[in-house]
Length: 185
Image (cartoon, rainbow, N blue to C red; front, side, top):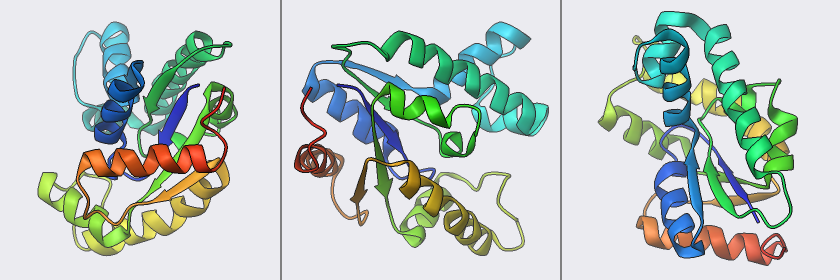
C-alpha cells in the first residue's frame, strides 16, 4: 500500500513520511528534492524548489512538478506497491496531477493549525510567496484557500497539534490510516 502525504508547508510531511517508511520497511519519495533534480536535468542548475518558483515562475514549476508526479504514478500504481510519498504544499493545487494522487495511494492530509505552521515557517525563514508586509495574514489566507482542497483530496485527515514528537505524529498517522480501513492491501 502506498501512502501519499499532503498538507501545508512545514506540517511535517517529509519528517513523518521518513519515519513511516522506515517502520513500514519501504521506499520514501519526497517530491521537493525530485523537483529539484528534474529541474537540474532540464536546466542544468541545481537550485531549491523555492528558487525554481521565483526564477522560472509558477507555470514552469507546475510542469516540473507534474512530470515528477507522473513519474511516481508510473512507478507506484501497481499491485503490491508499498511506498510513502511526501508532496509539496502546492502539489494538491496542481490540477493537472490531482487525479493521479489517489491512483498512487491513500491520500493523508496532515492538518496542523495555521499558527503552528506559521511559527515553523517563520523559524525556517519566510518564503517569498508570503506578503512581506503581512506574512501571518498572508499565510492565513493561503491556509484558508488550501484547507478545503486538502480535505476534498484526502482519504484520511489526521489532526496534529504540533506539540508531539515526530515519532508520535507518525504513530497517529499510521493509526488513523488503519482506523479508516486504508491500512489493508
